[in-house]
Length: 405
Ligand SMILES: Cc1cc2nc3c(=O)[nH]c(=O)nc-3n(C[C@H](O)[C@H](O)[C@H](O)COP(=O)(O)OP(=O)(O)OC[C@H]3O[C@@H](n4cnc5c(N)ncnc54)[C@H](O)[C@@H]3O)c2cc1C
Image 1 (spheres, helix red, strand yellow):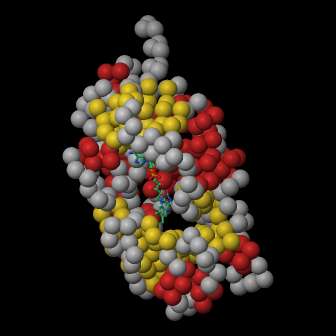
Image 2 (cartoon, protein in one colour):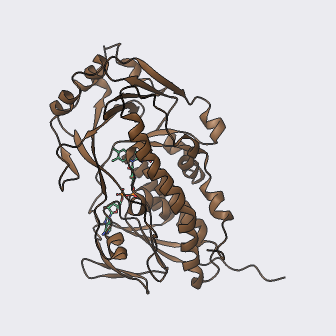
């Protein structure tokens, strides 16, 4: 009988310390690899706001042993109610009470910063080496290695480029920088403090965290979502409408809350009462973009691959951008762990692309479909992503063949 082979102790270099990069870091470290992460920001800013992390992704985080830490900051989504824009009539209601029993993992509403903090703490605990203020300029595709702006070179066995939707790595791979595809819309994003709502019984149900409900007002060309996050400390409000300040080169622009309120002043009075509580600061307009599906995410030579938004940025109406980054992280670790020698790294990366590209392309398209579906006066809601919450990416990565890649 052949002796069992020792698992390879690979040196994995990850570019970008967002949700995708961190998940890949934790998953690769758990496989026993040496993991380094290079992050261009000098420090982490608490960017972003509320995210839905559905069971396809939450099952991975639970598998990492992060269930309790995330339950402490997340809320379990129980219902989604679509409302008519002008008078708040209920158009449809979807219940997710038994979702966890059915899907095997929770549907979490969570602040991106809280999710990032938990993953970052876990990565550090496991011994992932994270360098801040390290901006990658270019790559040696064969070595492989990353050249930093400060002239340093970091070498590895494999490089995972998770450097976000305006990825420099993607530009190098394609030979030119291509801006993400602009949808024509933007998202106004704000967090409203719970204390703003005390003594207003009309608005109190919005903060019910035991029967957490996501309210979605839909109208012609616009929709607004509201749901509580951080154990009900804040109401997360996200509105999608034609872009105003982000039509040009700017991606995120602070706006005056009155602009947000005025845009929706003729909508349901309950919604207007919510928007009257918008904070004076930190109301942001985000340009909404996604990426046209790519033919490949692999650099020639097969030792560098794109991950997360860098390869498949999508519209928030998919509610899966972070989810797909999390799935990528576990998939790449599972596949790299199947390599028995370094020469098989290109096979593992190709298998990763074969597994992930069709799924992510489908989900990018679902984001576009949802946006169209919701932007009608009589929209009944519904999402084409519900059936995707059942997906087990770890199982899929374990069963795909490396040889056939
Ligand atoms: C309004 C809105 C709502 C959303 N709602 C949801 C939701 O409900 N559910 C969901 O799953 N997703 C949602 N998303 C999407 C989700 O936030 C993103 O898909 C996800 O955070 C992307 O993670 P990432 O790690 O791929 O990229 P990023 O978070 O962009 O991380 C990339 C990192 O790489 C670093 N970097 C960049 N260039 C370099 C370089 N040259 N060298 C070194 N480091 C570099 C950056 O500083 C950054 O830290 C939403 C997005 C928006 C805008």
